[in-house]
Length: 105
Image 1 (cartoon, rainbow, N blue to C red):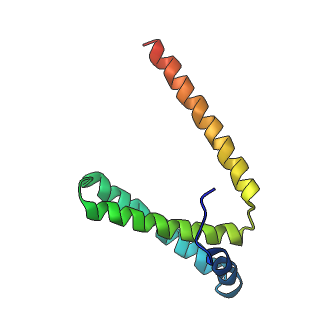
Image 2: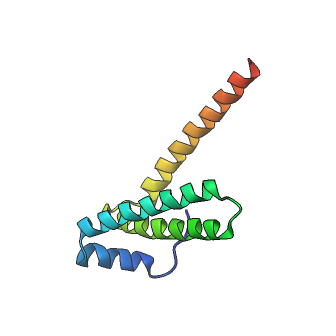
Image 3: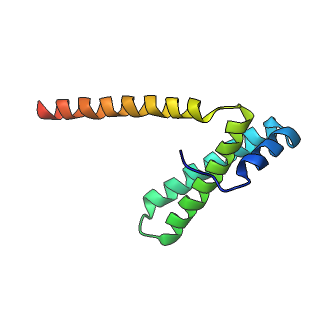
């Protein structure tokens, strides 16, 4: 799993206890919307370094908020790993199925 800088986990726990989940959920949704917008702008101007920098910034914001969601929902690393592993297996099956389809075209 990707490591977060020191203090993020502690901040996430503090935010859960002090700020409360409602505000954190709203901020998470807002940050995800900003990432969606940044990706949309990148698609239109992929050669603009400012677009790439904006995507990186928004990814960082979303990851920071997702860490807080992990804390809020008390999700363990093992749970995340297992879910991601399952998604990876499903994606690999889809890729293999697509290869089979392309062989018969």
